[in-house]
Image (cartoon, rainbow, N blue to C red; front, side, top):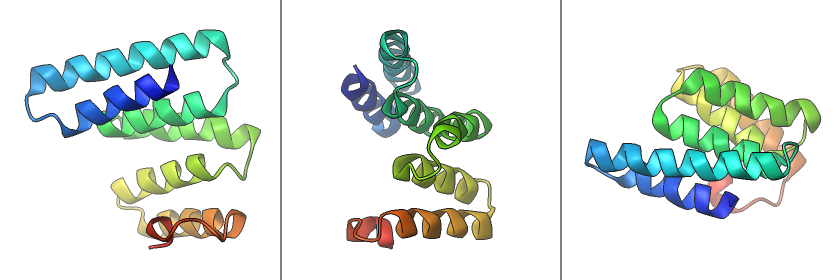
Length: 116
């Protein structure tokens, strides 16, 4: 379900027609909600929801969603990267950089694209 949520989030993000974009985001939300009903504590579901919210432009809600994951696991790299993206979007560049650094300290052998 999380993979389908991520797929429809991606489709919504790249779609240029507003109506189709919203339909993809609705489908993504439905898949993430179904996944949450199966296991409400699964971090990957919350990270996926955060990415969806960020793609929709709901920055504050995305921040809170990533925070839920980090409250349970301060070293969750996808959630750290998500919060770093939120802070960057907000124009909080120094906070964003600190979160990226924290992710790199947790996972120093991460792929090069993350290290950029």
